[in-house]
Length: 242
Image (cartoon, one colour):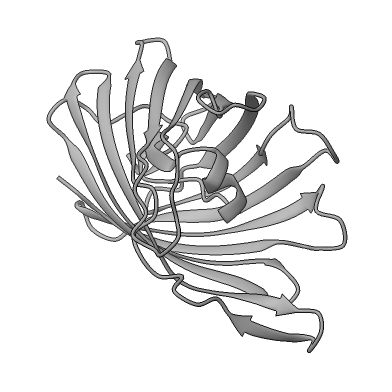
């Protein structure tokens, strides 16, 4: 049961290109079951640069194999490195609701799933006018042993943009210890983008607090493709299962 609670944690850069509405790489909720989630992320993409984001979301199993989800990202604060003063300075008017995401997933009995994610053109922050976004993808999950589960995802990005279509790949392995489920993941934000080859390492652990409450702590490390920077994202979340 715990392996269903473990959720991969993505960096801010990945969140911008791959909707969180897919929730995770493992099968959706059973029919009539749901989950509400609250998360906090602290992202450090570069020297003396940071961003804090609160996330509120929910998902629900409509029928067996079919799940709908909603995610509301709420940036709280952001700072950037001023090369002139060599200090960190705050970004003004950064807080607000930013691009809600809705998603639908449908899974077949043998572990293959398909999903559609939509990013709504809503941003309450001054001067922000996002466009409607759409992504399509496929997922596959299997239990390698009674304790080890594998989840994977391939996503076509930026389907409604004027530019090139992107491709995101992700892979995660969960180890179910009962009350806790440590996980290890690899993320390839956009394999079709120009420039350096990029990938992130994700390390975390999901924990079963009670039958209805779970928690997750994860760290995402930018391993390659970031130049002289070494991005780090720390994420903490809690979920209520109903």
